[in-house]
Image (tube, rainbow, N blue to C red):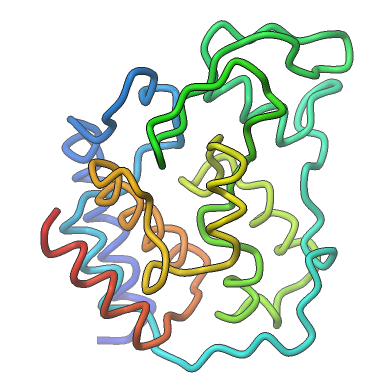
Length: 214
């Protein structure tokens, strides 16, 4: 079957199973405010099987090649928009900076009352995307990836947890909170599939192992 039609069939399956995937996905006090609902585990397994497996190459990578935190609405940029989406009781000033609120980090289960303690994680890191095919993208597509509010790609989390994750993939880093790992890998595969990014062999093996227990 041609790859185009196979991908289309998988997308149809994802749409049909979306409601099922939304049941019981998020664990934690305010997790319902978190990233868009990932596809089901079954759909993620199908997506993963369709991804190309290639060796990664970071030659030429620069974070500035992915314009991020662009204006989304009014004075609000992408970071501020996600802070409002993922937080509870968020109050912002005239420049859209969060002055009050509460943020639950599903990676580690911590809750924060200062926006400065929260980072917006690119679930699939920018460097990882570059390694996996984004090096051939236009600047416009890289900007869309870095500011994607539609796919499960951006999430407010504890800042030092995000920093410890860095640009690692699931072969070397997973959320310390085991209850969130299934959601994490489903989101990871969905983002990679949507953007037609590859996986390396260790990454694919780790994703398969985690999805098998979802």
